[in-house]
Image 1: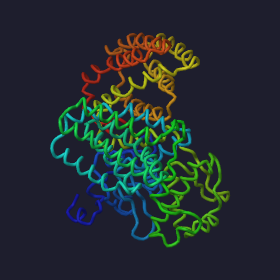
Image 2 (image 1 turned 90 degrees about the horizontal axis):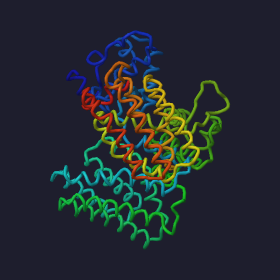
Image 3 (image 1 turned 180 degrees about the vertical axis):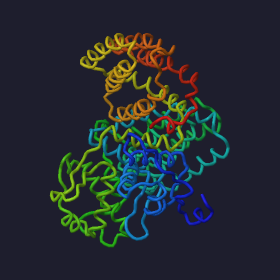
Image 4 (image 1 turned 90 degrees about the vertical axis):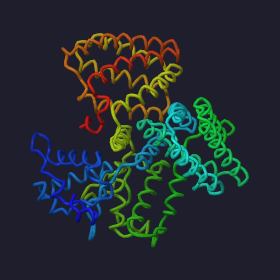
Length: 524
């Protein structure tokens, strides 16, 4: 980058951009993939503005339509913010947890996720990370946690501030434990969980709210005390006690089956968004974000179902008290989140789309790539999380799922010489097994882990004559043992069998030097 470009905050096209290679794939998709890789690797820096359209078109040797299509793809992936009008342009974004967490929160609420489901998911994800923290934590990082704890204590009387402070402390603990994959996945669920902390405190009388707040902050204090003593076992116990204790406060009197509700925190953070309430409420982009938030909340509440049509643009503009351009910006936000279908010339109004696990996994996967996660880091997360999930499946699997798995076991044994078929059968079997947990939150976690596995498969697959292909019969036999453990309802054996299956692949990953490669360099 030239000095003048750096000083202006905009990247010069001549410094960075090269024409995409022409080939069988659509040029816009090739261009989007190349720019995506540059953003995720940090070559294109967050908050930098890309050059104007004309400059990019000349540097990349593409048409305006091709360039705009590529930019729309990146905007949909939360990697660019395309601003219209005078002074606008494309600005690089580094994907964070908030957008993925918001999407997953909406997905989980629509799937009837309960508070108990969220607690159970956290109990799978976090305690081992909290234990690992002690061996890694330096004095500077410890001081950082202490400062975050002080912020919590100062926010005890502020429900919204406390929910934010608690979430920030929890995320810092998992981040500092050293596994980026677990930090991302736990962080996404924690964005969801923050809403329940806020709701429990906001709905309580002042005395109860303060009691809940002090218990939560006090539990963090107990964890910090164990960390200061460098007692890993005590730190792990303190974190488990914190999760259990918080659960008792947030889900009193057996209300664990109560469905989660993310809307109160969304509305508290965005301010009022009723009819006409947004007039004069800040600049157009802020008003657009508030309108998008309100429509998102209505989807979560079940007031907007899959396929429903919103009112006409004219009626929506009147309802929210905003201009047509501001409304279009709000609807584009939802379109980029795959929650809305906008079609030019469609007079029936934009159409609602409900969230899917596939999009949730893609959003989370993009955050993993942006965090420079390696295949080794991801494999370690899988090794920590999936056996625990399989143990839960052993206690809950139903007869139909077992019958399907028995059938797929036979399919695996028959496909040991056909690696593509073996791989496809394995994916179907694993999906059924993890689905047996009956926990929507853990189901999303499994999808996120699978997204990375599926994306990296082309790079790590072996030819049929490769010596590593000889492990297929061993994997098929171990999977049959896993199904026996699931059928017996034996969580310990089911966990051990799945861990053994994962361990078969570890020498292969290490021997081929895949372990230190970045996921962003492997997934196309």
